[in-house]
Image (tube, rainbow, N blue to C red; front, side, top):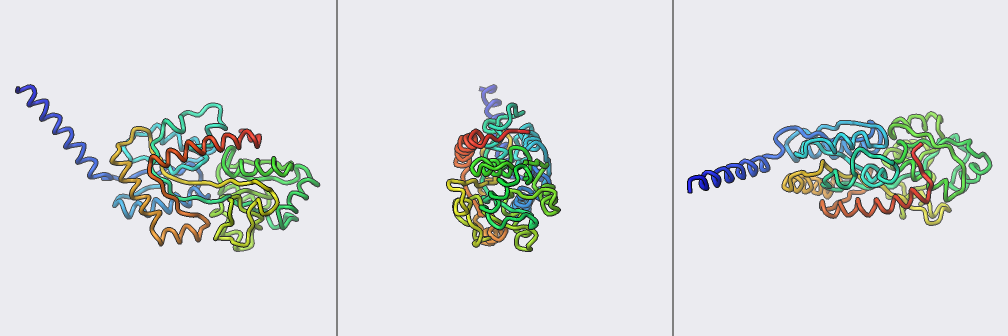
Length: 322
């Protein structure tokens, strides 16, 4: 009986230590990797969430920008991190669903190597042009592009991002020739758009909204099925003449595969509570985003569903990694 008693005591001690560790999570700062540079929508929304999480969790949530390769560099860093809840990825539909069909070789499996935690926000993309472009509507832009093939340059946050794919879908459906210029994030692309180094962009709405309101950019259409409350006078792409066009974007938190279930549950509950807070909802809406919520299992379903949807879009649009 003594060996059994010792074994039982060891099991109880281990279980007690595990429960104590789970109950104290987090007991040190959390690193949230944003796989794009500062200045873009992913960075903006990631920092909004990190700031609130720091308050509710009682530990600092530090944003770590790891840009490059359409979000794959930062995603890979998280996929290979310890699965203890202290390294998280502020992922997007691009990093978790689109890149799978765009890249022939990824250093990770976007579905198998991550633990879905919670959705946080969704945004439409918006077609914006530099005011020097002689087009005040989508129809005028299409007419100009057809009359001047490859004269317009389209910036994006990088090859395979939703900015890129939204633009490729537009080019395909409108039958126009526009030059794609990829950047390492929306921030650098936006800087060149404002300087008229590129003439148009399908940007995430929060990134372009301040420039549209200030008159530095001209908004032609949003890519969602309905108009955005942030810019109610801007038509959808379908309303603007590109029938059947729709492309929206979501943002959420994932971690490395194998995260403890109780840690996932705690993080998911906190993020959902933040997204449902009325003040946060108003803040997101003012920035052109809408709060989203989902359980970890529901989030996993969204990732699977959008992987199928966007892979079809990749094929239909002819988008490739340059």
